[in-house]
Length: 161
Image (cartoon, rainbow, N blue to C red; front, top):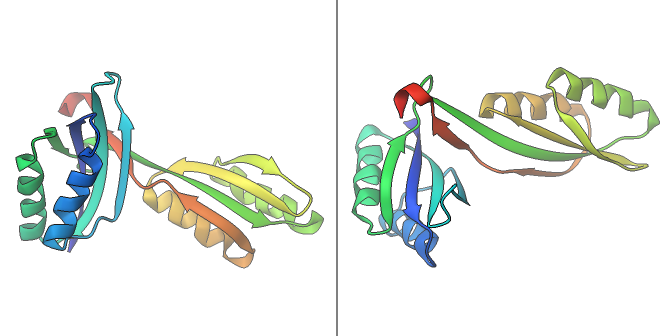
């Protein structure tokens, strides 16, 4: 099993997300993460879809997506040929004693403290999946009250477009 990340350019029309997600569900394929946003041209949106499977399944996913009428272009985001990032927001319980230690961990990862309350800190971090996972693992000794991740998004590097 291996992971594949696809950058899919689609028409920015009502129902396109449903049709793409429907293709996955009809065939029993799982989506690891999905991000969607309008491009520089409001007529188009770009979906970044991360999926896991064997070579045959991954090839079928790409072929089936290519058959959808809303899909304009599909590109694989290969490591080294693309830049992929994820955003995480983490709310951590933090009293006066814990606060400095948590801030020190955030500083090591170049994370931002985006909210401070009397009992907690909210931290924002952007990076690849390994960086996000390592950050969350270091917070293991603290109480994480809420956590949200955007999922992978990315583009091919200039030389590979």
